[in-house]
Amino acid sequence: MNATRLAIVAIVGSAVIAAVLMYYQLVYAGYAELTQAEVGEIQLVSLVSGEPEPVLAENVKAIDTVKEGVRLSGAISFRACFDMVNSQAMLTETYVVAENAVPLTAPSWFDCFDAQEVGAALESGEAIAFLGQRNISYGVDRVIAVMPDRRGFAWHQLNPCGEAVFAGDDAPEGCPDLTEDI
Image 1 (tube, one colour):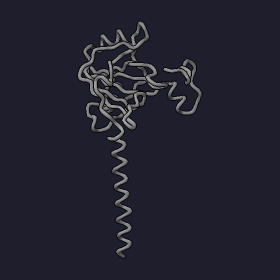
Image 2 (cartoon, rainbow, N blue to C red):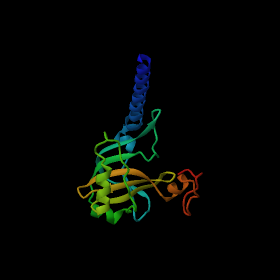
Image 3 (tube, rainbow, N blue to C red):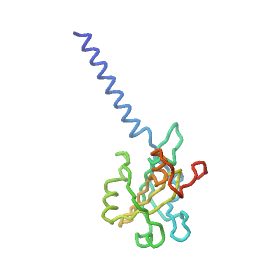
Image 4 (cartoon, rainbow, N blue to C red):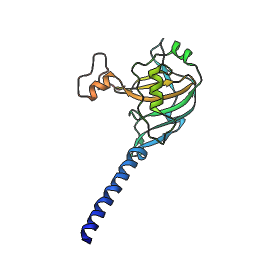
């Protein structure tokens, strides 16, 4: 009977340890906080030029995934929070508004980014989403949402090209060639 109990304790104990390690890897070990220099300038795509232009942002906090100490900057795990200097009204007159913006959740320890709050504000029209940069990596756009109190949030989101290619379909017309350096 003691050998059976010992075996059960060993199996359950190793399963608990494995679960804790997996949770840590998913929530903490895979992410790194970024410095302002690593994030670079917050940019929005201009209505006039169609190109990303830097905008004034303060108090930038950001995270992204890392693998073996190297930042995976094209990954959809990028999240950022900041304070915008310009108002929503000024931004809508100058920059491209993003369609179908849906913020992805961030790890709970990155508490400035609340995807549910941002998503609800976007649905109600309280927040406005802007295109920050097209194809930051193939099929991935940077989206910037701005609240009326000028809090800003950034994340990476698949665009129609990325959605099609990552689903195993052919890229829609107008997508860059997969072999092009974006």
